[in-house]
Length: 230
Image (cartoon, rainbow, N blue to C red):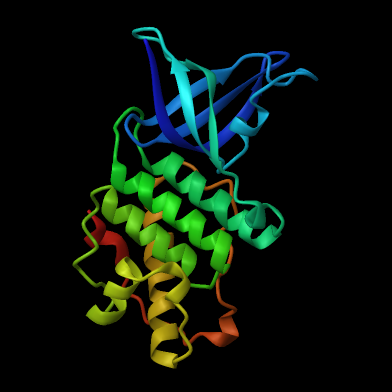
């Protein structure tokens, strides 16, 4: 079977002498694993299609029942050059990609998750990052994955702040008031506890943009913060 689909690269690794394997989140097929044969050779083509968080239209060949499909061609749509030139933005983009890879099952499409990742990368490319970027993305991905927090503020976070974290543009989530900074700290704690409880092993990417402790009021957290997640 040959098909085409838009996708964003979540992860890549070398395979055998000259091949690469990528984990790709696609619009119509969800997360799939693909092989690009010969791409590591000096004259190998399609290298750009294997770069983390590259967005492209992929032409894919897959046998029925096969674990790995094969990329045979495609067209690059976005490579996000500003992200690649800034270490902090790059760290955040890789963090988002790992979250999507770790929190999504294989071959279960979700246009909501695809567009969430594309929106985050696009805003990161053109508007940079802020301390609320990472927790806002994580909370939205949690909601899209069916963990039911979008309409249920926790830790006495105000409904207005909770709604902004789930609905506003990432680039607009800039907070300076003490109450908002406290709420942001609580959102970070919700994300941390959820990921620690849900993931079998820790994230490989370091979560960036956590506010310095001296800038945040210390939140008073109940012992079972993430109980409401399930």
